Structures are given as structure tokens and as C-alpha cells.
Image 1 (cartoon, helix red, strand yellow):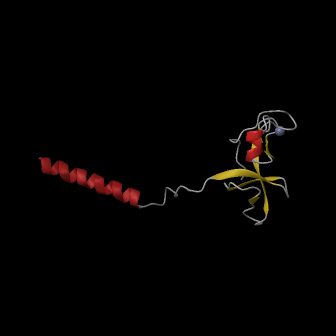
Image 2 (image 1 turned 45 degrees about the vertical axis):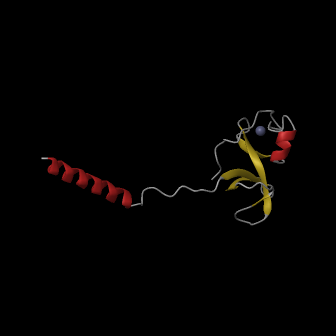
Length: 111
Ligand SMILES: [Zn+2]
């Protein structure tokens, strides 16, 4: 009796392992953190690896043209901000210069 149950469990276990072992369903999670920047050459929002030093290197052109950006919910676009240091130093630096709306780092990411 108990032997039958064990075989069934073993079979279920094997099936599970096979299903997981396929490995084509789940892509590996990227370990690099990314942030949204604005390319000061084109004023386009760009997603690039998060770096401490700005301007950051544009992943396509290789030029140091990326300023950190925050999303403005009123303009519905990413605005370049001078630097993270300046945000910490200057109250109101995270507000949109046009509308005065408080900007956020969790806007919809550009493609
Ligand atoms: Zn704005």
C-alpha cells in the first residue's frame, strides 16, 4: 500500500522536475539596476544602467549625454534633472519647472 503511494509521489516529483528543467519559460532576472535618463542631445527618455556618476553613457551612442530624469505626471513625460546631489541639497528640485507638479521616479518607462 505505502509503496504504491511512494511511487506515485516519485512520479509526480519527476514530472515537476522535468517541467521546471525545461527552462524556456522563465527568462533570467537581470541583476543590473536600470534607471530612466534623458539624452541631452535628443531630449529623449532612455533606459540605461544605473550609475552614480552623471552624465551617464548612452547605451547606443556611447556618449556621456544622459542626465538623470524624473517623471512629471502633469506633462506626462520625463524631465532631466541636474543631479541627484542637487535634489538632496535644493528643496523643490523634484518639482516640474513648467507646471510645479511633484515629479516621481516611477513613471511609465520609455521603450
Ligand atoms: Zn512637467
